[in-house]
Length: 362
Image (cartoon, rainbow, N blue to C red):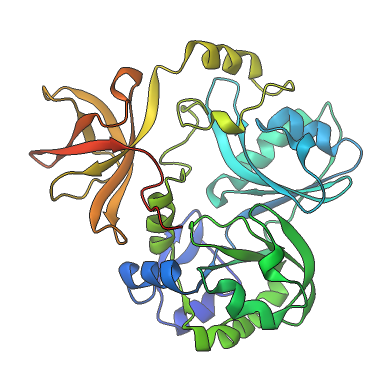
C-alpha cells in the first residue's frame, strides 16, 4: 500500500483510513452526511493525490492524444481542460480522464489511480509509432480538491490569481499558498463549485496547512472519499470500475458527447457504427419510490420480476434523503419515467428513471 504525502496529517485528524486503488486513503472524518453537507453548503478539502498524472510533450503530443482519446483535443487552447476517455480495441473504455493543455506542445493527462499502470501501458503502445515525449509524474505530485460554494471566497487570500475568473474546465498556472507555480483548475467532480490544486509532494503539506488556516473562518473541513462518492453520484458523474469499464462503450454510458468523429482514434470505426445503430443497453439514472438503498451489484427487474440489468452505483442521497442510483438496462427499458424495480434482499422495490443530475441546486 502506498501513502499520500499527507498520510500522517489524515491520521492526526482522526480520519478512517481504507485501502483504495493501492493507497491508504481517508474515507471519512466525522461521517459521510456531515461531510457531504459541508461541501454542498460551505467548503471542504479532499486529498486526491492518488490520482495519476502523465505529461505528454513535443511536436507529436497532440497526435498521440488524438489517437488514444475520444474527445477532440485539437479544440483545446492553453489554459483549457477537457473531459475525455481512452477507448480500447473492443468497444469498451480503458479509463476516463481529463486532458489539460499547459503549453503549446505540453499536455497533462489526469487519470484514475486504479488505472495508472494500465493507462500508461495502453498509451505507450500507441506512442511507439508516434514518438511523443511521455513522463509519468504520478508518484511526485499531489492533488487537493477544494470544493463548495464558499471555496473561492475562502481561498482568495492565498493567491494573486482571481479565482472567481477561472471558468469551469479552465485552469491557470500561478502562485498559491506561498508556492510560486501550481496548477489551479476548475474541473471539480462534486457539482458545488471550487477548484483543484496540483503541486509537488514536497509542497503539499504547506498548501494543506494554509488552506485549512485560510478556510477556518468559513468552516472548512477535511472531506473523505465516501462523501466524494455521494457528491459525484448526485451529479450523475460516472465512476470508473462501477459505471464505466473495459466492457462498457461510451455510447452505452451516455458519453457520446465526448466521442468526436472529426478524427481517427482507437476503435473509432466500430464506435461510429454503434452511434448509427444505437447502443443495445444504456446507463440510466433512477430514484427509489419507496424506502430502500440501492447498492452496486443489486439486480434491476422489470414489472414481471425478470432481471434486466444491474445497479452500478447507488446510495442514500444526503441532499435528497432518497435512494438514488445508476445502472445498465436494455435500451427499450431506458425511457425517462419508466418504472423499474431494484431487488434489495428479497424485496422488489420500485424506482423511476429520471433525468440527471439528481441534485438540481448546483
